[in-house]
Image (cartoon, rainbow, N blue to C red):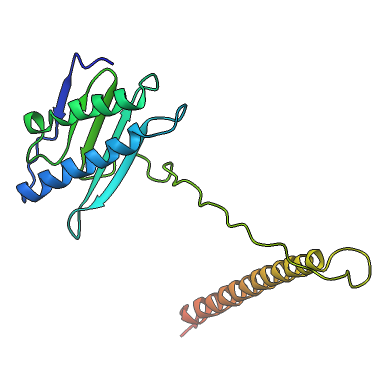
Length: 190
């Protein structure tokens, strides 16, 4: 685990409410660091957090370690990086501490693709088996026929909605053309 050289970078803009913001930054980065360090073996050791700071500003945090670090080395590296926060980033809207083996960044704007960061899927709920009863005519299960019926109904609804929208669009276009014709001055010879 390498902690040298270290690169410190910060946003030149200061934050207005310093004490509360600095505490929020440290808490959020520490929480993300613990999450990244505790990633299972073989998983990427990174974490992102988004925290509401004021009614119009959020805090965005990203922390990560290189994949070769163990859980304890990742945590130790990120803690050393966090210790540099007061040196570079107090009262700043954003900052970065970069070590060769780990780094973090925080900003008051989104700098990572939030849609790419997907929460882990929920644990599936195991339901007890249900009895579907005998097939109505012996050609398949009741559930399958019900699903087929639901699909047909959905497709029919979508199709009829689209036809109706096309009809409304056509009627609107016709009315618009009629209005244009009536607005044109009449060609009369006097």
